[in-house]
Length: 405
Image (cartoon, rainbow, N blue to C red; front, side, top):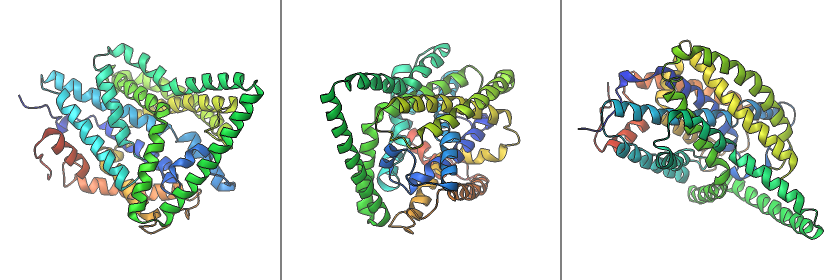
């Protein structure tokens, strides 16, 4: 029996619409990191922002940051569940094919990190995908969301415990002095690393930039405990949404979708605004009660808004159908975003690093995404898959796939 391959006619169009919408939000969040060192994430908001620049930064923090990666992660989990369910119904092999898909995705991620941009999510998804398949392959549907929530909040809870013990330990003057000295040393090291990275990205050769990217990814994986568990949690939540029918047959779950649209937006927006305001001016690498509160609000708001956005888009999938081609080419469009903008900003390209004000960045995002919408429609009128999606299928199934229509 041949490995099961999803039929194009079986696609759930609203999932493609959701992916397209998520890609818009991801570009909005990623944009500042195309023109700012990844290590600067420890500083929180970009220093010196004021007026319109500050308003845009706070708006993106409140309404987009953390929310669209949560949404995209849920869609990744839902996609896994859909493929597994269809393979099971067709009595076709699945696990070997899916593991190859993850290996190929990891390869895409490594190439993306090395040659394009260090803020890659593909390698992360591949690594966490292996964890999900290994540890939660046979988890009953009704337990998926119960596992998801602890993983989503685990890093924040660990931060809270660490902050509590740190506060108790600082009652010892000797410890407090040593901790203050360590913080000063870390801040100096961070400042030097950020300045060095900015200089390399602004004016370095391609080889120097590749070396910096690997230093960046080392920095990111050194903090893996803080971002990998939430990704796994959202994978599991996406699986639950699909297998419970909420994403597979949304018309049958319209009351639930309307209820969570209202709850997610009405509670998620104020919570996220409060989190963005509290986080402004906080150095994320320095534990404090204020940072713990801000992070707790941020994670809570991100989860609520991600669900609110998901329900809103699913309920409005018909008028938003123009987003579907972007979502069908999600991998190609994600790679195109970083390919284009790193070429614009990095020294080996147009060299515009640091020259686009924060207030102007959303306009760049909207204009570029509009081009992606047009290109995606044009491409899929002529080809069955996006170029990266086609290559992913070929390498996963081990044979050439049809490409042109």
